[in-house]
Image (tube, rainbow, N blue to C red; front, side, top):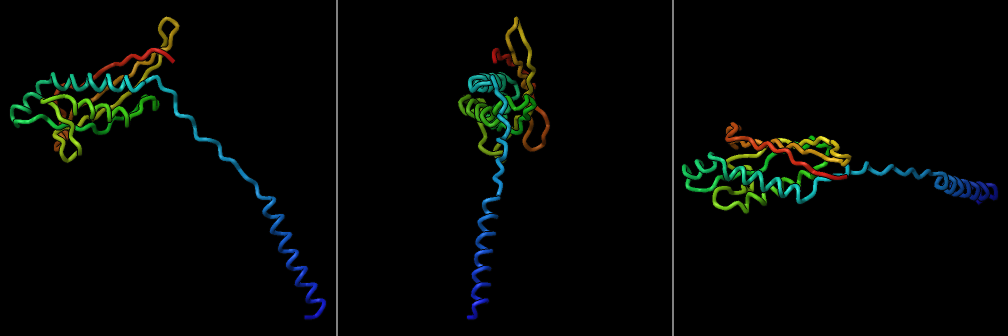
Amino acid sequence: MLPHMRFSALFLIALVSLTTMIGSGCQRHVELPPPPAKPTSIWSNQDGQTVAKQLVDHLARSAWTSQFRDRNGRAVRIIAGEIGDVSGKLVDMTAFINDISTSMANAGEKISAAATAEQADYVIRGKIGSQASTENGQAVTYFTIDLGFYDSKTGEPVGEPFAKEHRVVGQ
């Protein structure tokens, strides 16, 4: 190899190495901001379980569930369907729907929790909202639970809807 070619090859190798080192040293590491914090909720697991039990008690007292049992010789199978969260994400909806399913599974002979929508005779649908307030200088949140019962095949409403205001003090 000629001396000037050897020098050119060494120069080219040095230039590539220097460019690589400078390029990697100049890379900027940009930290993404953390996701927004989940809103703090005063709705607890106990609140979900309490409201779910009240819902199942409402169903057990409803004439249509007794009429269904008399006509079909078995407990009505109900599944918790879509329950919209208009509370500002203050309610863990997955946990609440699980609370409803658990309460129905423990309800006895009149009501049965359906495992799938295909097995269900009726579907629970509705929404949960919230309204913050103060009483005597203390923070209070009123959760409004509006749930209806619908025939799983026709979508027709059945029975009296479950409308409840659940008061939670604190925060």
